[in-house]
Image 1 (cartoon, one colour):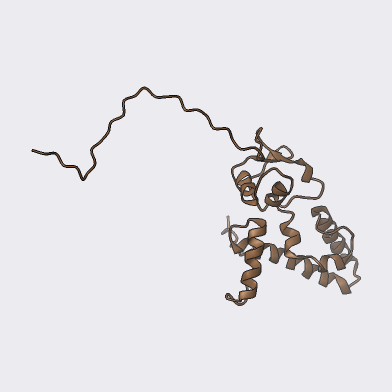
Image 2 (tube, helix red, strand yellow):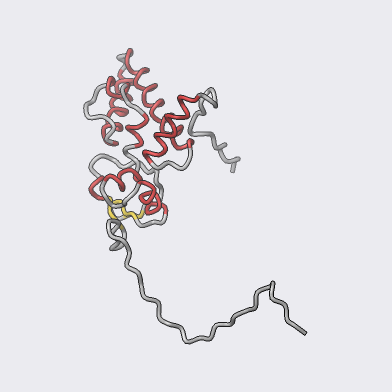
Length: 187
């Protein structure tokens, strides 16, 4: 057996780390979609960039092999619900937010299964969300077009209602009260 393949980054970092405009945009996106860190934004941006790069490569050539790859790319993006028509211009117009809208966390919040976007993330991570008949606990799971209506809560949980307070049964145990440290025993 050989050595395992090296794990490489699935994202590209920004070229300059301290651009105020970029930081403000990422903060707004992070709050809107309930992202934990900037790496999630960078992953989505890199994925969109790869789709757009592929579309630019297929624009000029009319080779049968590239036509086949072009139709595969367009059908994949259509299946994910990122584009409606089969045109490369739609692929070039894709934004990072388009992909972030297709995440499981966002779909759970948009469908009203959670009160807040962060609660939606917690439901997903804790395994309370079903997609079809499978439990999915990855907030960045991309929901395909047509599967949105199969996203549901695992248990009979209702996010819109507040949980009822349970009355605690009174305990008949004697409680031991310890003297405070400042109080010293007198001799």
